Image (cartoon, rainbow, N blue to C red; front, side, top):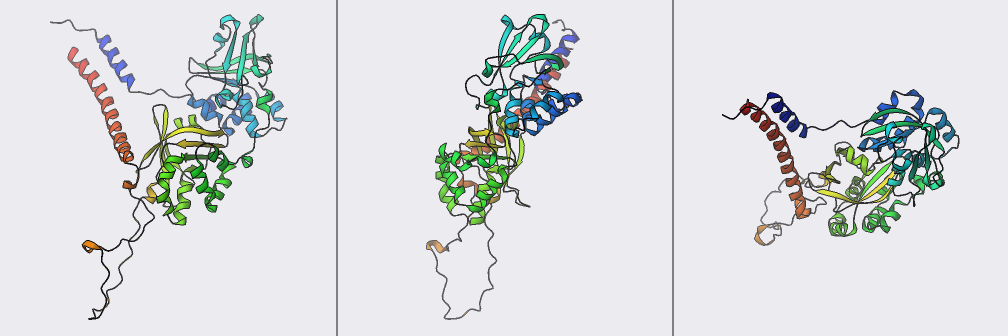
Length: 412
């Protein structure tokens, strides 16, 4: 008889297998800073600029917080909220730097990329921060765009969760000429011009031709707007059907492809679920589901699934993304209601007969709806594949735990 493995080993095997099916709890920068009232202003502006959500979506991050006094100095410049976001983005390092690591930097200095660099709007090295371990136990911070001049010092660690998130205090605001340059306000953005210049001209032209939808877009920009713009080729293929819509349904369709809030890619990845659109109105929900597919972000309705393929602009409060196909709303896929037949007149000998098509069929009334069959052939396959994948993942997790339990029982 084979010797039984020790119970502790069996228990460890069970824990390791079960751990595969669990997920870790993400950090929450707002909650972390809430326990430090001296940083309430900094915390407030992380939320206002939507940086908090982006920080929470990252798995390895360092936040260089500044206290209320330092924030007052920044706010006294009366900068726009968009410029403040650029400046605060310099305080979010895309690497982990706890107090211990700051004093053990290789060769005494390091260059860290920031959230400002990740936006793609920071030219050259303007989105990097120089960190230097100075004599006497001090650590200096400086923006590379300013020649790496160390204008701020490490004060203390507020919270560390190696190697997930580190929140540290620095003495002064990090800034640069690039970050402080006036950022364009939302009213100055020509969103249809941006679409036309980057492969979405067909959609932009359709939007410009619809005064009501265009006005809704314009009015939504100030408070936040995210657009999911089909590329020209798929929208061209959809145009014949779009042109047969009533004007009301054309408006609803165009508004369906935008949501009235700003959503960066990282925010979309961390906020999977139903998303209400500009077209949402009463019983006509006009919503879709955001869902990650590996590193890609997909948008789903009951009709089809599309993928986000690129970013045309991501500058709070506006984001415009391209999609590989035209996302089709459920609300316009339902067949148009058939009018109730009129009472049949009394039969007369000389009454004319209704014209018939070959085979005895009459012409069907025109409809501006589309059925699932109108969507590309692979869309139905996408839907089925996604559903099957969900079943397989759920089954795999159940099987994993079941095998662990069985293994434990058999070896006892």
